Image 1: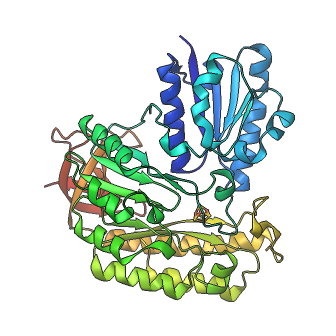
Image 2: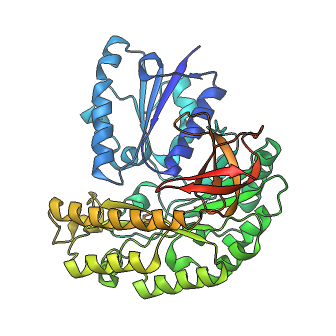
Length: 429
Ligand code: SF4
């Protein structure tokens, strides 16, 4: 039996694309290899959002050159955002690569593993929303579901609109059919995926889509990523408040607390606008958890701008953040903005941001001690301690000390008995 090995870098979108690539390969009779050495097809599903991820990929790619030398029939494909951005230049730089497949073209995988055809597949694909591929999902309880592809926002630092193309929404019926099928297979939670789910538009808008999914029997929890603050409508806030299966958690990237920097990032909102949305979310849904993304050390960011971000973190008190140093990406507007900061300043600012947020997250978690919370059990905890792990509706990880015949997919109530920075500990009540 032939085997495949997929190495995935980057975001949930890539993780789910890899599930689709695995699905296509399995449907062609391939099995998963434990490592690249045992594979007949190796796919790197790449990310170009930060220079670090890109460097890591190119060093991995160099490492497998000797494999191709020993086994010339080995097929090597580069997929994802670097594939789209670099196209044929990847094969010029690494001639041991057979195929370059952009994120809008993973449907070609089936054809190219059966017959050698072209090598570069990076065209814009207007039919991406209509293509249905088999999916080899990694999880039996929670599933990712694409509701849209691409992005129209052109944040000045971001490469996504260039690699994943313009925004295209999937037909609502096709999404609903996929989720009904997942419910029949026993899935309990779906996460709707898109670069900016708030701007989903087909015969219904995003709250309208949530309303339809909320009716599907068997699905207990609905989540979505990512939301753009400028498109977070009151209608969506009420949908989260009123629909019992829509979880009380929103990931709402702020990026900076300085309105001057937000303008330079082309985010199309000010800090004041953002704050108003957070206040409304908390007024309407007091238990909601809000998480965010922050970029440290964007070009021309002064100490004052950085301090606005620090004040924003103190003021808003997110439940958690992802924060990174600004990494100028070739081809984006931000890579040409003068006044890029030395790495040392970016690192210092990032450390201050992370340190502050850690304290806030830990304190917020500690406030949950003694509370009774609903947990969806996902499986054994990551450290293999024999404990089970699950998540609250607000997306906080809870490890459970007593099993009591509980299994993945069960929804249980637990009492929080301990709280740490990154997880909670609970016992079944
Ligand atoms: S909203 Fe901005 S950051 Fe998000 S994918 Fe689109 S351009 Fe990139």
